[in-house]
Length: 233
Image 1 (cartoon, rainbow, N blue to C red):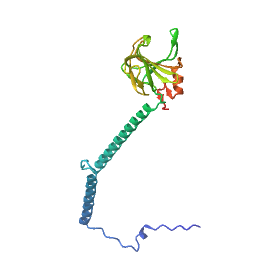
Image 2 (image 1 turned 60 degrees about the vertical axis):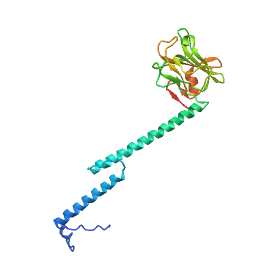
Image 3 (image 1 turned 120 degrees about the vertical axis):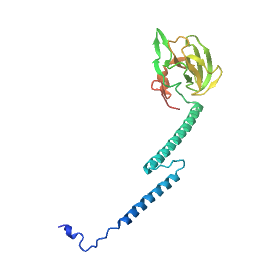
Image 4 (image 1 turned 90 degrees about the vertical axis):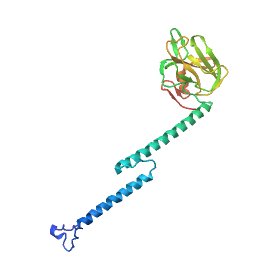
C-alpha cells in the first residue's frame, strides 16, 4: 500500500514554530517607498538608453512608445531593402537577353486572337487607359516605328531567330527605327489610333513571318497574358 501522509490538523500547523512579529508600520512604509523609488530609477534608465524618445510619466506607455519606434524603424529598413533588391531585379531582367515580360500591367484582356469581322485578328487587345506607358516584351531591334495604316502609330521589334512583335494603336512612340531595346524598356504610350474603338494595346507575335496566337505562345515562354504573370528566363 502506498504511504500517504496524514494531513495536519489546523491547530497542529504551527506547533513548534515561532511566530515572526509584524514589522512596524513606519518600516513597512519605508520599504514600499524604497521599492517605488527604485522602479522609477530603472524606468528613467531605460528611457535614457533609447535615443530620441520622450520621457513618459507612465512606465507602460513608455514601453509601448519604444516598442512602436523600434518596429517603425525595422519596417522602414525592410522597405528600403526590398526597394533596393527590386531595383536590382529590374536591372537584371532588362539585361537578360532571354527575358520575356508583360508589356504592361493592370489591363483588361479585351479581345483574343482569331477571326473577327470576317478577317483574322492577328493579335490580342489589352485594354487600359490612354496615356499608359508600355514596354518591350523582349530585347531586340526596332524595325518600324511610325503610322502603319489600321494599326495607327505602330512599333515592330525584331528579336532574332524569326521572332517579331507588333505593338499597335499607340498615342505616342518613344523609340525610332534602328533603336536597340531591352526587355522591359518603355517604347510607347497607349492610345486609340488607327482602326480602334477605344484605348488599348494591340500585341502580336510573328514566327518566321506568320502570326501566332500570343496567349499560348507567350505562356510557353513564361508569360501569362490573361493572368498577368511572368517568369524570367
